[in-house]
Length: 220
Image (cartoon, rainbow, N blue to C red; front, side):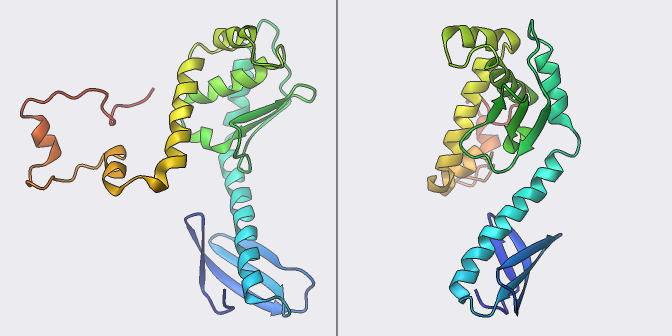
């Protein structure tokens, strides 16, 4: 990355980039809106600087996003609501959406009462988030995933199994998206382009074919 490069793209986000070489020991970065300001030692190679800038930008973007998704306190409100459904409400001391959790949907420390939730859950139907919270809090009573654990989780959140199936679909789509052909991608996002005969898809449906499991159906 050259010092005069004006933008950098990180995880689909384009940032204005300002790089200044100066007498500093480490590479430092600051994000202000969409502007990423970087100060770097003169001795650092352009290749190394390029790699570090992406790492720092990703960290700053995630931190900024975490502040946004937690601004309304929704995570804590939902966690306390779900905790109240237990016969003996588990301890809930702090609840936050986090942006650095990629391998799990949630975590819960039974000793401290701290709940951490994958920030992507914020964008999903509320019952999915409630199921994850119920799952994590149920570990206050069962450390494993025994039959007793699932019985408790389902009693607190009856949509537990539906949420598990939903998240399995989300995980599959996320991991497969880049490998899907354009036509299939268009189908999944609800593309309504005409086929090669020129007849719009919606018009073809009107000729007699029946629609089942429509992708456009609202999930509640």
